[in-house]
Length: 91
Image: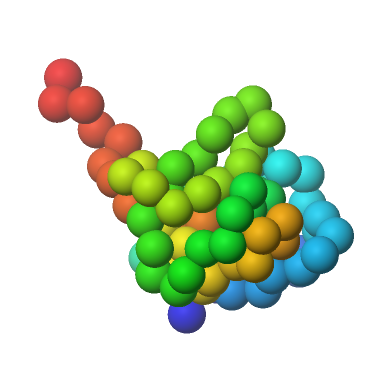
């Protein structure tokens, strides 16, 4: 499992909670230079599911998006999703 490398205290990328531990939209850098965003699930999400991140509310739901929920969510839970597309645009 990935771990935070940017000095943020209390980050657990696989932890899910009923109340927020961080501000929605908080970003963190993880091992392997991965990028993570703190969100609220707008529906149940299975483990290893590609998700869509909706802003400005920073909610996540299963769908063809740019992130993956490595650990599943129950509807309404808070936790971290991992960016799984390249930030490079080819320019």
